[in-house]
Length: 87
Image (cartoon, rainbow, N blue to C red; front, side, top):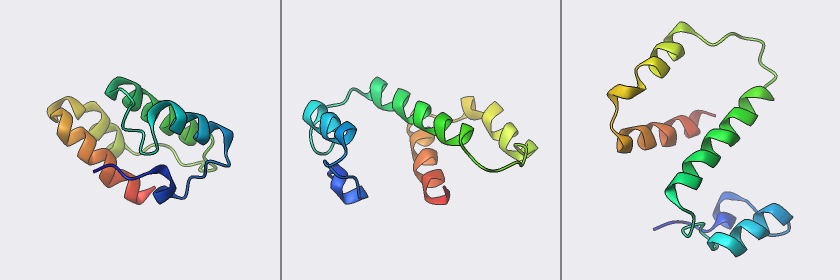
């Protein structure tokens, strides 16, 4: 079962969050999978571009990116969940 955005410390006091929950529900379950995956990519890219790290991407990480085709869709989603714990 999906958790409401408040579980993740997001507040409806933020206009964007309020509009998202009005559009897709408190747990965002009304969002299409395609929109959800696209937003995950955009948010991740935005965070990466804004990172203060001056370190180059490692060869190990690049290899994983080059081999993502080896994973099934559900494995990619599980990997995203695992990586979020490290961010």
